[in-house]
Amino acid sequence: QAILAQARISPSAGNSQPHSATCAIARETMQQQESGCLPCTSCFATVPQDKWYAVEKFGKYSHMLGPGLAFAGPDCCSCCVSFRSITSRVEQNTVNVQTKTKDNVFVTCRVAVQQSVRPENAYDAMYKLANVHEQIESYVSDVVRSSVPHMTLDESFEKKDDISEAVQKKLEAEMTSYGFQIHKALVTELVPDASVVASMNEINKQKRLRDAAVMAAEADKVRVVKAAEASADASQLQGEGIARQRRAIVDGLRDSITHGTGEALSTDKISELLLITQYFETLRDIAA
Image (cartoon, rainbow, N blue to C red):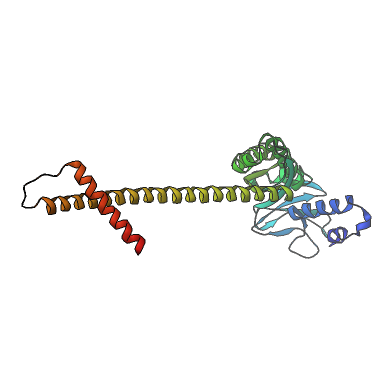
């Protein structure tokens, strides 16, 4: 309660006090002072399944207690023996790191780190680090700010797994000596600046409009080409029909004139007959 009261300070007190209060709350979530299970004494302690208790005699570390009922040692009015607990659960830290890519785009990288205390190194986890969350945040920021500036914005999205792997390797190498096991480090989100997001959306929009215009032009081209081909085929068929028509007319005239006479008409005569026929057809069309 005292720590929470410290966190509720007024805005006029400055930025350093809220930050220190937040750090104190973070430490409180990892470690807590505990009391024995009997009133007015700390001889016995009931340790929950998800915690380890460190027994301190006159402030000095003595030994570690596992889950269950345990005897800590002789005590009088909790003056000789005290307990300090740390959780054995897997905890997750979310770290937001702002950095710049190779193509000068500012992004906010959100990394989720899942860690837990090693059972054999619970002493180191309790007494070596003042603030685990701040330590992890420092390592994550160092790795992200040394990796992302070598990538473009597109590459940073494509290589999120590489960033996660680099962060996890760094944390595993550094946090093992403090008694912590790193289960996973995940880059959950990469958020560019709002203006960059708007520009990227506009670029994609214009690109799709250009593709749509190209496809519409291709469709018009196909439509015009197909219409020209159809017109050419129609003209060809029309010409073939006219040629067959005139051939039939010429054959009919020849047969009607030479029928029963055995005479053969010359080419000039046939042409004259064809011209006369076309002349009368033209007169008929004009009259109509």
